[in-house]
Length: 130
Image (cartoon, rainbow, N blue to C red; front, side):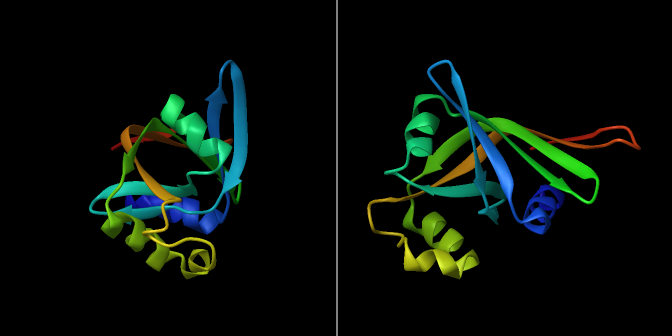
């Protein structure tokens, strides 16, 4: 899982795919963080992506870096604990201008039953499950 986090952080931006009804929705994200041996993302409850995750927590993310890419598929689980939210905000201090752990808007999700696939055009895919 640390290798997955490192790749996503090094890429800087990854793309999160959700669904809204029968329409796929994809948008850029930048928050990725390991807390208590789980891989987390962060968003705000007022955003459409939050509503989509709550309606269908199966998501996939994808990032590209130096000719390699990663896809991470899994189910997101909301963690409502302040400690989990604060850990994310501590990892991304720039978010603290917009979010606070106890603001009623900040939410963090961790991946459950995730499969990460590292791919490139020059080698066989490598799969990591967590």
